[in-house]
Image 1 (tube, rainbow, N blue to C red):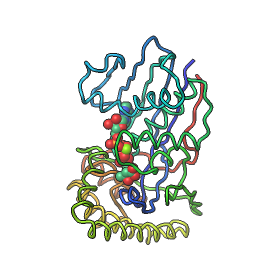
Image 2: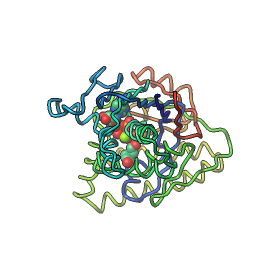
Image 3: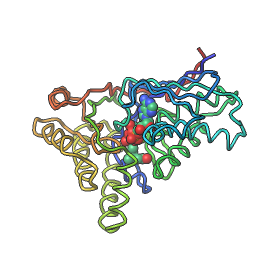
Length: 320
Ligand SMILES: Nc1ncnc2c1ncn2[C@@H]1O[C@H](COP(=O)(O)OP(=O)(O)OP(=O)(O)O)[C@@H](O)[C@H]1O
Ligand SMILES: C[C@@](O)(CCO)CC(=O)[O-]
Ligand SMILES: [Mg+2]
């Protein structure tokens, strides 16, 4: 028996980083996904064909002989195993091979870390014979992402668990009913930092200059709440304008890099209604109002386009 979880990846429309400090954010699930498969094995293994360390296969019992990079990369999975052993008393008596498959590169600002956690939580818990509700999956996954990263909001884990367009506010998620069929152009550029590193940079700014930091995240809050109204009323012109403003505020927070700024700036000059960095920054994902010019520019600048069509189902699991 193999348990397979299918997790949609996500894009953040507004409010990333600020959401970590209690501000609202808007995210939605897209038509790209990550799969996690769990099956019985004589030892614990994690396998992924998709990491920079291509084709790694790690024996979790001989962890200490593996290098720090490997340990770090698979820590989202090992924390899930630790969680079920600590909280549910599974003393690793049922060992598993955990395989991760995705056609999107890891760490690109599309919530791949949350997808690994949500997928492993749902598939591994089912493998252990537990039948967790979505509410539990979301809560446990957030706890684990937070443990690994040190800093994290509920946004990515909750969005990928539930699916659709969500407003994240005060540690809760609200479904946004969007009246018009809405889609975006999105892709990603090579990333030089992980989200965990970007989160630490932002925290440094907060510690160094709290008053400047607060005024930036207050502005992000205002933009996000106005964007919610624009989304609900289908006002794409206003939405686009607010995306550029949010990008500017993320530039001010120090999470953009030259290629992203160049792309956003060139998109604006060529008439695209709105564009911004999406997710943790430091390279990685960008999102624009749907526009062929944005997609051409992305290609021309060396980015990779992703399928940004919205999905509404959230994580699913099946036995194969
Ligand atoms: N295919 C995969 N196989 C194994 N681990 C993965 C895979 N994809 C992502 N990961 C894990 O997630 C980490 C990337 O997390 P990170 O938060 O930096 O990126 P992200 O979630 O795509 O971006 P953001 O949080 O901004 O949306 C990787 O270092 C690795 O630990
Ligand atoms: C940067 C951030 O806001 C979004 C990462 O996709 C981090 C988080 O919300 O945990
Ligand atoms: Mg992440």
